[in-house]
Length: 499
Image 1 (cartoon, rainbow, N blue to C red):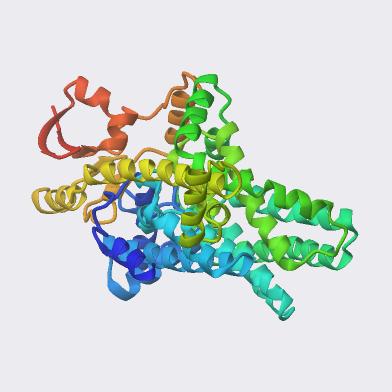
Image 2: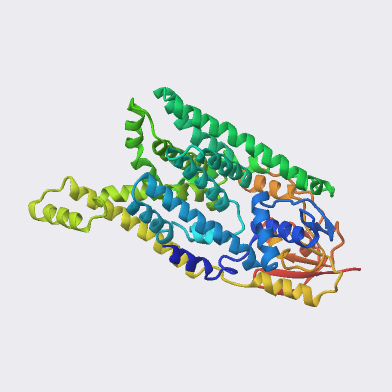
């Protein structure tokens, strides 16, 4: 499994999927930090705040790779691959300890070989410069450390440290992590298991306090970098993407869930009976039971938010699908009679020869049906990956700009993935433009972006996939203020038409 994940991760590291907008901001900050000592991007060649980049742990990880291996795409995505391998390993170990070894291996097999979409395959999404995989890595390390407390209480310190790092890695982590501790905490209070209550409550409070301490230390280290420009932080970005109540969006997300998330739903629902029996039990709880419930609560709450409130982007459901693997693997363990080919063959033979359709035969039939459905989704994901956009257009367009334009030429673009390799001064719209776009697209609003594309007096304008979708430069093209001089795949390079 490890070798398979490693090979999957190394193949097409730079080009599958192509470097894109969300990665670009984080890479811009990491490159600028390494090359100039400024924690942020450049704007017209001058230091600027970090705009829409990932949080400090992700930027610091990428910057460390840049310092060791140089600035480049594979150097950045190598960090994501390492986080991915670590996260898969942690999930396997945790699943093995919560259930058994065969279930731990099966969980890895489900994640690696039965993806529901290629865009959110763990190795594909994990290699990208995004916050999801580091967040999951830190969360699982924290859950595993808490589980290890049954051996020695010193593991509590490790759990607190890892959870604080997870809170720091991604803003969306906090509510789901809090719920994942509050549910077993409530059960422990109902059982009057005061020892477990103290550890859970201590983990919740101490992790949050340590997160605050980490955040203050980060502000001391880089706080002065965040106020060097007139650009301000975007207002309403998290709310615009986290809570969308438009009926059409909710219907689309529900249909997406019913298409791609059925295996995850089966995994989560199949263990509800176990948790119900656990809740009714009057015996003292164990760390294993608490961690199993934490993991389940985190995944279910995340999936519930995705279905009921989120904007519905595919990658937003990834944590819920990833965390469903242990429960789905345990479901298969039960349906396949302990992954026993002999017992399944016997159940099938008995069912057909003696017309006994109950019991073990129904379990095997359920396993076959679930396996077939997951196989269809996996084949669809593989087919889409085969025909996906595998290219080096980012390298080609930045090479053209670096070689064919004057050294001081100003480049205007909102396609931030170009910043990593661009050796010309560049300018981009403020982050608030992105917020207004989300409101206009998913909240059925009509807010204006209010951005002048010529405010930096650019010599060239580059319109890529995101800039074209945003339409921020359409007025320039329509008015004939720029003319097309080069097209490289999805990128159009325009030269300014001056009077």
